[in-house]
Length: 376
Image (cartoon, rainbow, N blue to C red; front, top):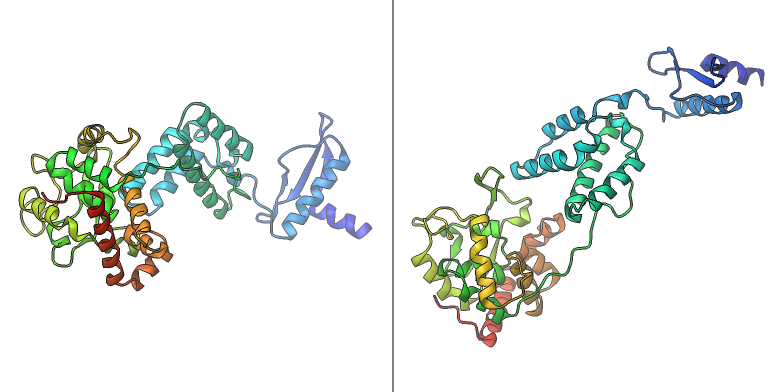
């Protein structure tokens, strides 16, 4: 007992303050100097128990410097974002989320001030203020990633972002068009965008992938379009092509033979000249922009009489559903869609073009049965 007390006295001590509360002092394992604990205690027994816990944490290597997390949150977050390797568009979105949703609450304090209770309150206030759930989820995911780095940097002991279910949300079921409805929208839109609608539905390419297509990416003999890049637009209006996020994003996708006339007609009348010319351009020959295309899309959607909730991206969902109906397996669907997971990339390497051709042929049969006309 005496030895145990001796070790405790050597390690640290407790003393009563003028206020009547008890203070714990212990030896910093890094400097060897005595330092006060973060808080005081009502009784001597409580203080001695706290000293025992601190000694145990240090002995097990689980102690962390209480002052380490005193670094300013905004300064730490700014440096963290600056040092991350991010694509331009992803960096822009992350900086926007940080500025709009995270820094107003946590920026003025320290990293250590971010507690689970504060995170829970912050998330609840964002939702109550009408911030969309997808935006709140992105903000939470960004904050959690930041605090994971703070744990790695030994500024805090554990990540305070521990709210179950806060990192995801239920995506509402999106509308799926019939083949006839797809052609109704395509026939209602400006002629230069007709093929854009058809390829979105029957190859499931994303808008950015379609906007980045060049003439050399279209194989009229093989009936394929090859995705090598995707267009992105920054908030300042700058357009640039970026590489897909994974190897699976680079892919050749077969289109139904029933669309060949529409593809040929489009290339002859609307695509930019030259082998490297964009397949889809605006009325003045400039690059296709999502913001400029939106008005044409809304008008065509209304003219076709389809659901008002239909987004252009829903054509991709429609195409996926139609391909599944045509008999495509989950693996084949993931490949056609250029799924970004490593599993999808591996699948892409082993899928044969013959199987992809068969899927496109079945889609063609559905076009014929649905009464769609694909000529220009």
